Image (cartoon, rainbow, N blue to C red; front, top):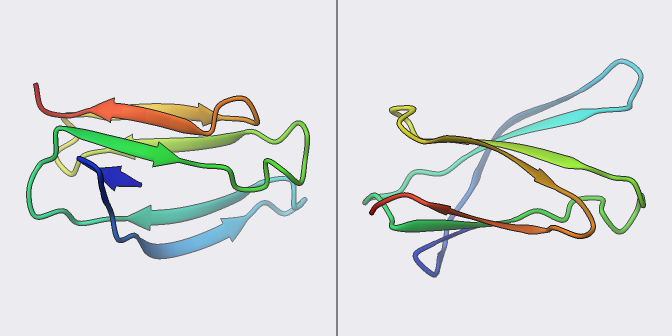
Amino acid sequence: MEADGQKIQLTVLGKERSDDYAGAWIYIESKLQEKPHKILIYNNILLNTYSDQKNILNFFTPDKSISRVLLFDKNNIKEEINIKS
């Protein structure tokens, strides 16, 4: 992830998997000093391993003023979110 072109340090909060091993969830957060203009997110986890892999990312600001659900697959590994106008 990047905020205004600068890499963001991420902290893993936890993880879990489904009982049938078909799904996994990883909980990650970052804390920024200032509200950025844009966030760039790269997500290619397991996309080279499974041809039909899909990754869902739930993005939201602490105050929930911005909330997005992003879908990543082998044809889409990057998404941009505009924060400030």
